[in-house]
Image 1 (cartoon, rainbow, N blue to C red):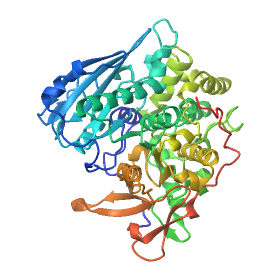
Image 2 (image 1 turned 90 degrees about the horizontal axis):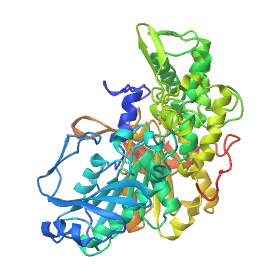
Image 3 (image 1 turned 90 degrees about the vertical axis):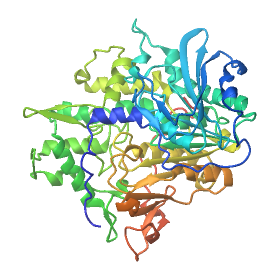
Image 4 (image 1 turned 60 degrees about the horizontal axis):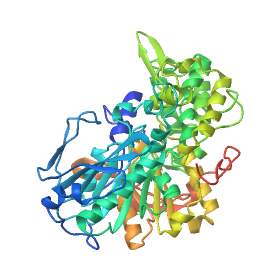
Length: 567
């Protein structure tokens, strides 16, 4: 190894493409879990029973919009949904049920899609989460769950995909639409869960043997929300790259663009790439072993100023450029640029293009901020769709951070007290990439550290909650420069149903003919994978788990959870 592994051509994406990917690729199963046998498994009563669900179900404030068998092997995503008009193929025969849930006396309507195997199902529920400001409906994530024998469910949380900019939060008169905000924060996923279980019970004659939630990004946040608010909803939760402190995160995601604006230095993207490459080269070697990715970004002492004077295809790197990168890696502070730390920065070696994006045309480089952060200002905080983020002052940014954390506490999922979830027998597997370019992994680490503190220590916490950090992995496994995490859902199901807690996960880099060119174990936090000193550096068999790569633990940057009782 000992080399920088460039992305395959065409993998690099702009910020708008990343935002779109949050809406479409919202659940990361990592594998196609084989169908189980056991309680609740077996064929349904057949297509007639499927069609009869409309009259058989009696759910409060819920209408069965349609219930029909689909044996074509294909499903065309409806117009208006992400990927609308695209056929999803290779599906087994299933009963397609759509529901509309009312919320009297409010006028909001939540739509739910539930797919039940007509035959050969495993009697288990796998609900899938959303991405960005969209809950779904996540047809692309439902398909692999159905193929693996699960009944699967997804919901739009009451707003259409056309409002994936967060505009659903704002009424035409400029007031906040709190019913829809609550639907997005917690109610939509919970109601989907309740109704999916009822539909399974009516169709199969028994409740699901096990219920799982699978989500990444916004879906990861939804998984944490379920464990905190509704601990009896799911036996197992897979929470990937969770937006754990949404109310703080959405302001912090503007920090890099704000820094460039204040310093009047918009770095062309190839300069950011030079900083990323230099950070990996500086920190990929530990104790004489070149791992190829930064195993412990928290211990990386990369100095951006070391690149001053270096030539790049888009100009020579200046001290002002290095100052921007230093601020981006440091994270948001009050009283720009060097006040009290408010939130984390990007980790060294992370692709900057997600949150610190620029566009260059006719020789002029301009900012291209992450849309979710800008829309948080426009629709949620200022209630002004025409608000220009470039007018934000230092004082206003601090005020927006404070407003966000107080006014929208309902979006926060940083409550570390998972006692009720543990006592209900639940298991939660959390994972995130250490090169996540959209959600700061240190925020996820901090949350798990707080769960350890609230749960009686690391050993007690590991009996029901485990965190896995994936070096070199980007957001939800995308745009990664290291081996990509896989098998998370299989590990969770095995833990729930057989009591075997995952000792490791496997990360791989694809090679030719479907073989793994490189593999690496992922260890439960705070441990990391350490080379044995012999064997191929590209083989997981050459590594063991040890605390050598554990993070520095809580620091002055870490704060006591704001709301011990949850948001």
